[in-house]
Amino acid sequence: MIRRAAVVITLAAAAAVPVGFALNSASAAATCDGKAATIVGTSSADRLVGTAGVDVIVGGAGNDVILGKAGNDIVCGGSGDDTIRGNFGKDRIFGGLGADKIDDSTGHEGVDRLFGGPGDDTVFGQTVGDVVYGGDGRDWIHLWGGEGHGGPGADGIGVTKGKGYGDGGNDKLEPYGDGVRLVGGTGADTLLLGAADTGGARVDLAAGTGRTLVMPGTTDYGAYEFTFTSLENFDGTDYRDIVYGTAGANVLDGDGGRDTVYGRAGTDACRAEVKYGCERLIP
Image (cartoon, rainbow, N blue to C red):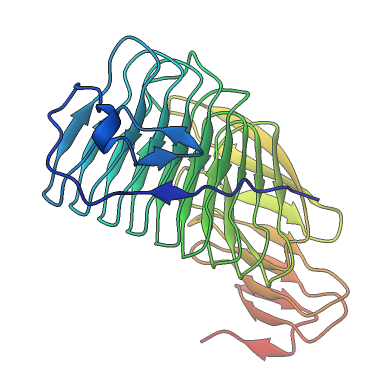
């Protein structure tokens, strides 16, 4: 079972707080993750910048830009569409009500916990120990390390290093590097290839294995292998793919290239140059 942290943001009706100033006792009603705020946004689009120490930052109603800087910071977005960067330290970042962008790619020295909110969030995890939770909404998560959990929405998860979990919803999971592990979840989930691939793929949905080629003339020439579970559908590359389905119903879309698909058992929908065991064709 995955335990998701619950965060409560408390805001008092208060005057604007200058960036970098600590709140006095009369206005210290704003909290993030149970901690009293040291920096609070306003109803405008603010730029809130932390200090070299430990900060507790709470965004306001506008579309804020929040920078945690050094220290083990705690940051809560507000009701707007916020951009939040933890930077250095072991940070805990919570997206607010809007469609937030939470980016840890510049603070990879720390091990962070990043939580999207109810909006359609974009979250980047960098470090091996990072844990990302998309939350509600149709989120997009990209991992360079650690693990990412989509949540109940129909999410997109791209993984260069680490593990990606779709959780609930009809998710799309894409491996970008060697040794990646993908887990679909309870929805009808899709193994998505193509964006980072310059060669074809060989995938067995039943066995949970895949191998993608990277063609000569590219930076990462060679091949990378990945494993997965609970992925029912396939969306391939622009090159020659070979795909094997499961005993259940699959949607197997070779996309471009001269592809071969094997539907196996179940009522499968396919698009490829060569098709076996397919009951329906994808137009």
